[in-house]
Amino acid sequence: MRDADISDMRDALAALKREDARVAKIRQGRRRGGRLAEFRRETQSQLTGFSEVFASEETAFRGGVSSRLKAHDLLASPGLPATPIYTRLEKPFLIWAFRDGRPIGILDETHIEPLNSWARFRTRWQQQGVIGPKDEVVFYFMWQNDTPGDAVVDVESHLLLNGSCWAYAESGWIPPIWWGTGTFGEMELGIDAELKLLEWWNQPASQPLQQPAQSVEIAELRVEGGFTLGSWGAKLGGEARTLLGSHYLHYNGFLVPAGAVAVFEVSLRMHYGGFNGGSCEVDFLEPARSSLVCPYVELATQSAPLSVDG
Image (cartoon, rainbow, N blue to C red; front, top):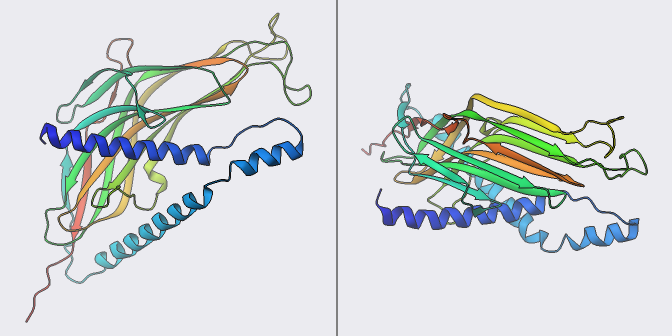
């Protein structure tokens, strides 16, 4: 792929990430204090503009249903080959990192090579609000359906993790059992892997209906601080965990029109949150040989048979 083509795709991919982050913020829950009337006013103020988002989500859903049904119809076509054609995308055209949909410079080193593409990075977050940001490290792959007919594609990929993470909550004076709140710090860190399919023939690119196998939960850390002077009744400090092993991601029945281009994202996502003080880190940089590896995306393709007039 030419550098100019990659530059154009980067602009479009970045715009998609910004929109994903905007919608994600709308979907997030929020904690609010105050009396019921004040709580209701603040909640209602957040509903402004939701109609546009609801309409967009419904349009995307109906488009996804239509594509899914077309895929089923194609698979039911007489004369469809019994064995799919397998295509292996052995290296990504881009490795990129984001925070809340904006590019972020956390990648210390990246490497693109057939069946051996990886990234090394470290990301940290110091708690600044109840709901923190979402970081992503993404491997981008691309495929064009060069067959003369529409194709139904099963997609799979793997992520190999060789890293670590930790979460720490600050101590405080008042435990959370008093009046439902307190000054003990709380910290949450969630890590998951995701396979995302982008219908690049639509601009902005759309996505098919979601399937459970597209995402895998890898780690969920929740820690609570204790008393500033002592350790009675609470856990001081934090929790550390090794991130080790491979994770399988899969999608069945992705419809790609003849001649169309599809883009595949394989990503590691990191979510942060908490209150009253805390911090966390995800480390794929140290020690040596720490890395996040995405070796390939595999496609199993079945195409519509050519019609013969006469």
